[in-house]
Amino acid sequence: MNESNATNYRIANRSDIPEICRIYNSHIDLGGSTFETEYWQEETLSQEIVDNPNNIWFVAENRDGIIGWSSARSFSPRFGYRLTREIAIYFWSAHTGKGHSRGLLQKTEDVCAEQGIHHLVSRVIAGNQRSLQFHFRCGYEMVGIQKEIGRLNGEWLDVAILQKILTDKQ
Image 1 (tube, rainbow, N blue to C red):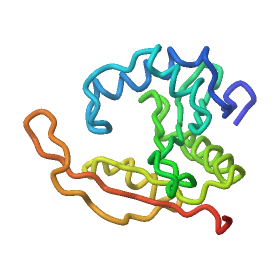
Image 2 (tube, rainbow, N blue to C red; image 1 turned 30 degrees about the horizontal axis):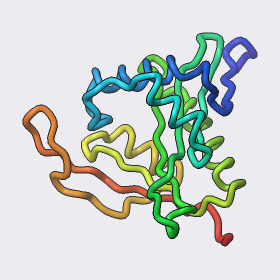
Image 3 (cartoon, rainbow, N blue to C red; image 1 turned 45 degrees about the vertical axis):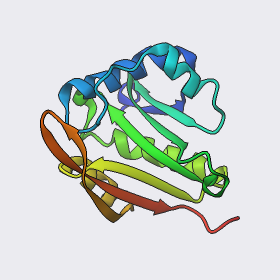
């Protein structure tokens, strides 16, 4: 990859929020990767990214600007889950299938491991084979399917629960 095509993965900041919202909202429009139906708003996301130190947010950027984002958010407020994070990763459609996702997920996992996070969870709409295969290639294992847990567009959808154990610490 030449320098002009290089992808940089970094911690997200306040100025990234509008583009993170646009990327996610594009997936609401596309369907198949989220149960969300209302667009993310910058003010709400600011609380997630800037005001919550337990949440880890990254962006992937190249000469085109921000092309994707990932998050590792608190799985539950209960004390016993303090070393567990739920991950998410989204890219502009034009930038999928080019290896950027793997690099961004690896950066996210590395920082989680550095912070002592032990367990990562990902929930994927079971029909989203592309996302499932991506997670499997990155070392996630399927631990279950929640049958007909969500309903969109008049259809019941299953969700696959995937996990990856990062460390044996703590």
